[in-house]
Image (tube, rainbow, N blue to C red; front, side, top):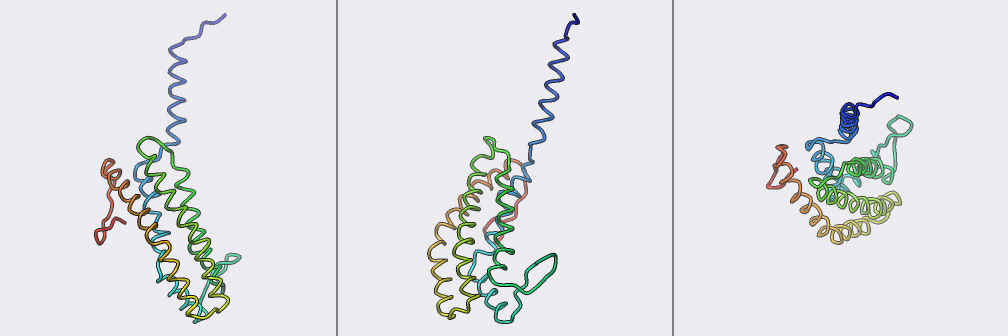
Length: 187
């Protein structure tokens, strides 16, 4: 019977183990991009201005969406789905796929909370208002719904954004990931 060189087996197993685990490593830069910078899918659209633009597009008959690889006229509901919800779901999935370790656990959790909260707002309140726009409800009714949406969610949205900022800034500094501060707000 042939003798097995235990040192050689140990080295092979160690190399194999390292190569398998290194495939799951994500650079700190990617963590910041996925968990923090991608929240722009929320922060850019979480604004009454979004609805002002959508109402203007509707009034001009210029709501466009992609269907069958073509740009075509669409509804406000389709527009919200394509411009907000689909990109948000893609970003949420990227955060969910981030490896979790002691260094990223709280950051990942805060990012997921923000994405899930945004998703809840966009899939309910935003689509409800888009349906009102498509149904040509009275302007006053639509404006009241928009105002109520932000009265209802602003405090919690701000809390979640601030929590994520509180976690990402030290993480980025620790890993020498440059982040940009605009108007005293990271983004």
